Image 1 (spheres, rainbow, N blue to C red):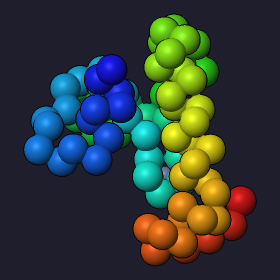
Image 2 (image 1 turned 135 degrees about the horizontal axis):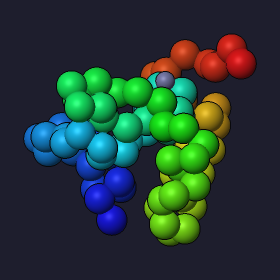
Image 3 (image 1 turned 90 degrees about the horizontal axis):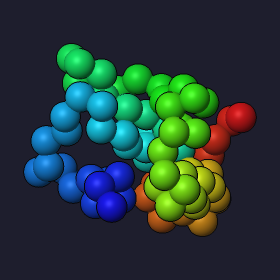
Image 4 (image 1 turned 30 degrees about the vertical axis):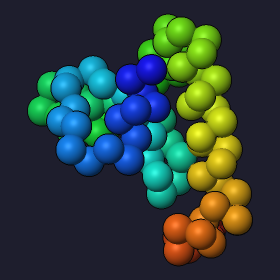
Length: 79
Ligand SMILES: [Zn+2]
């Protein structure tokens, strides 16, 4: 699954429309035509296949856990 294999693989160049996840806050993102990361809309998220959505939810939840943040030396979330 492309969404998961791209995460953490810095050598893989993203293409417009690729989806990713913010490792800082767990936000769902996509690359726009300029390859800038922009938030994924609810509509766009719902169009993903169920397996991809589930992976996103799991990773997003994980990123927000104190244990994970501590391990990656991320500051605690304020929201
Ligand atoms: Zn973020």
